[in-house]
Length: 183
Image (tube, rainbow, N blue to C red; front, side, top):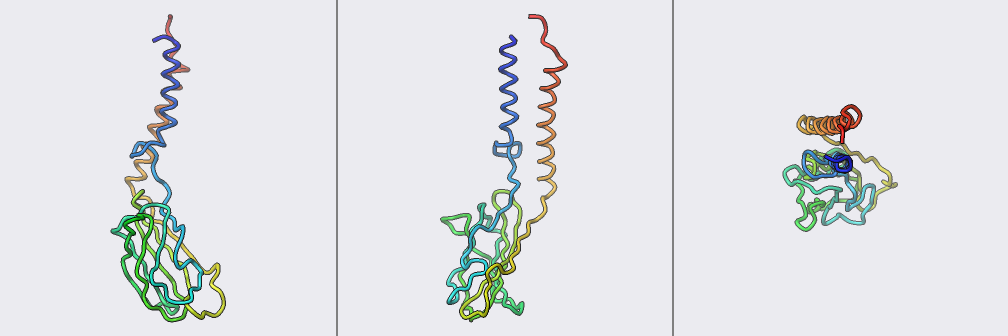
C-alpha cells in the first residue's frame, strides 16, 4: 500500500474509533442516563384548587409499561391511590392515571418507572396540595433514585472501552513501531 493510502486508512480508522460511541447498539453508544422527571401535573410543590382529574408525569426517555406505578399517599402516610400508571399511546414519554377525588390537604405522589431506552428503573416522589392548604409547598421535599446498573450493562460497557483502547493501541503501535517498508 502506498504511503498516501496508509495515511488515508489511518485517518479512516481514527474516525471510526471516534464515531463508535455514537453508533446505536451494544458496540456503540450506551445510554448511561436514566429517565428523569421533566414535567408533572400537578407540579411538584403545587397547590391546585380542586382534586386533579388526571395525574400526568413526563419523562426524558420513553417508558416501558411493565414497571410503572403512581401512588398517592396522604399526609399521615395512608395510601390513597396505588395503581399502575398508563403510558400515553401518543406520547411514550408520558405516564398518567385518573386522579381520585381528594379532599383538601397535602399529598405525596410516589412514582416508579422503567426506561425503555436503557432498561433501568427510576423512582421518586414529590408533594402537592389540594384546595385550602396552610403555608406553601414550594420547594417541598422531592426525591429521585435510580437502580444500579446490572452486570451485563457493566460488562458490555467495559468490553467496549477495552475494545476501543486495543484498537487505538494497535494503531499507535503500527504507526510508531512497525515502520513503513521500502517503497
